[in-house]
Amino acid sequence: MSLSGHVAFLTGASQGIGRACAVKLAAKGATIAVAARNQEKLNGLVREIETNGGKAAAFPLDVTDEEQIKSAVKSAVARFEKIDILVNNAGITRDQLIMRMKRSDWDAVLQTNLTSAYLCTQAVSTSMLKQRWGRIINIASIFGQMGQAGQANYAASKAGLIGMTMAVARELGSRNITCNAVAPGFIETPMTEVLGDDFKQAALKQIPLGRIGTVEDVASAVAFLASDEASYITGHVLSVNGGMLMG
Picture (cartoon, rainbow, N blue to C red):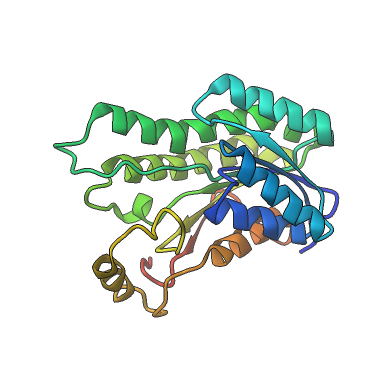
């Protein structure tokens, strides 16, 4: 599954799933453009990739700012001449029961998790259309498929991302551009490590494989969808959840 000669742009790349995806795609030979708000963490990631023989550059970015997205993508294309692979990974949570949820928390999650993916896809599509090759991979969630109490905003954003994935797949398929989603289940990340042990144990009982997933599990799925081996897969939601949700 060599990605040599391809350029990947990843949002939310400073930690967790995004960081693991950047490292995995670099190991497969892709040139990596990493984007997130934390410049220090991005610089550390770039150094790690370069130390291991890869090529990477950091593009500090707040995905809630449309002009920053346009500028970062433009800078990445200027630096690397193209973008072949887009991984829309940036995401946040603002959990609360629906009747107590503030409008600002609803808006923040939808803006970061869903609107940013639309803006990034729009920004990179020109490059992909020109070369008639592209891979767009959206990091969704099991909770966009089954819902979760206290996460109406998060679940809605991820369900919306799945719907957008299918629409974009239909729009861009004729130009040899695929668009797929990866829907992780319970994965050990900075976002989940703050959850209590009781919650983790309850979740574990729902996972047939009997373990919590790792960021590498998700990154491997992303690397597959980015490769030529997945050239006939589009509009698909690849569940990486240990069997927590089937069907």
